[in-house]
Amino acid sequence: MMTPLSALDRVVQLHGNRPAIIDQEQNFTWSQHINRISRIAGFLISLGVGPGDRFGIICENSFRYTELLHAGYWGGAIPVPINHRLAPPEILHILEDAECVLLALGKEFLSLLDSEEISPWHNRCLYIGPNEGALQQPQYEKLLSTTRAAVKHHADEDDLALLLYTGGTTGRSKGVQLSHRNIVANGMQMAIAMKADKTDVYLHAAPMFHAADLLCTAFTLTGAAHSYLPAFSPSKTLELIQQYGITVTMMAPTMIIMCLTDSSFGNYDTSNMRMMLYGSSPMAAEWVQKSIEGFQDTEIVQGYGLTETSPILTFLDWEDHKGAVETGKIEILRAAGRPVVGLDMRITDDNGDEVPLGEAGEVTVKGPQVSIGYLNRPDENAISFRNGWFHTGDVGRMDEEGILYLLDRKKDMIVSGGENIYTSEVEAALYQHPDVQECAVIGVPDEKFGEALFAVIVTSPGSILTQTEVINHCRDRIGGFKIPRQMDFVKEMPKSAMGKILKNELRRIYGSNID
Image: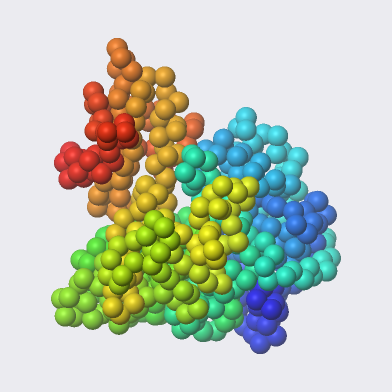
């Protein structure tokens, strides 16, 4: 069976006494981990979370986050990881859209219950963390110590396992439904690509609400150990790599660059780390070279994917990276890589027909890791999931060796610091200001984050806006990472004959001329 629970059964059978969790607070073997998640599934049921029910999770990276995900699989409930950087109205939308019956909150996020939007969840909240004394909310460890193991829920491979929310073209997050088969299939594909082994120690450096963290499934399948970086900082990342003998991790290019440029780099032993995957955005060739030089014992590799594909579609391996740096032929470093095992990929035109090799078109895929569709979005499902193929919205070309090169994004998505930001969401927030007549948000180059948000605004006649006013207006409407920090106020926008704002022209104007 291609389900996470059957995979866990196999891991316990083969590697029960091997380490599953290596953490500053507690360490667990795989047998101990399974014992805990069976009881966590039990207390979730006692809190009203049964098979088919959804529950939200807002927490920093931790072993308890993993336990909640696995307990959901055990009891047949569907975890809904939520980006903790979102504003309360955005969080509320996800909770309501997913019809969550419970919200699990880490200590750092209990203050969300003080917000108007989340305050009604006081009585439907679980505190995640070690015992904390007197709290109104049910406490994780206290419930765990008094609850018996739940009976396993045996799901079908195509049943919904996980709901991950990503930006939507209407300005609202949309729920990507991932089945049990989706998660395990991509785990198997990446276990092959990354040569996952039971002796590995995987560091959860990417935020666990993000699809990128699903890469860890490859290492769960093989009985490897897991360690956790609660919140990213360069020095803490390097410290954990040394302290726990981390062998594999995944980071956005921004995170890797911050490690390489941190004053503490060089003070830590990273020699155990055999492989580092970067993803969420490309990395400039010079930084690839610096990464290879800085992490001398580490193979640098790249993965491209989407939330809808669980998440990895293509893989650019170590030999490609090493060869490009050694020969100076760096063109391949601009590639997204080769399709993973078991994936069919086509480059298609607007009619869905395959274009000739080397020509540009939409990246269209079919495989066992492709989502079963968006929640409550029949119109978008009809557009994106057609005739058994998923239309990614990304524009690319394939060369004669089967290597994919991405060229542009049809969805106007900006990738800043590894976060996917949809301009429509930001523009919707800007338009709520009464003095904004027209606006457009584009991505511009940024040395630290890869891309930064830049807003171009036409104010209402007779009105004057400042950058500070715009930023303050956005704070209560969208997450801080979505707020443009750079902007220009103009009299008119470049437009097509049909009156459509020409974002390509805005990119030309502002792409290299920002103070």
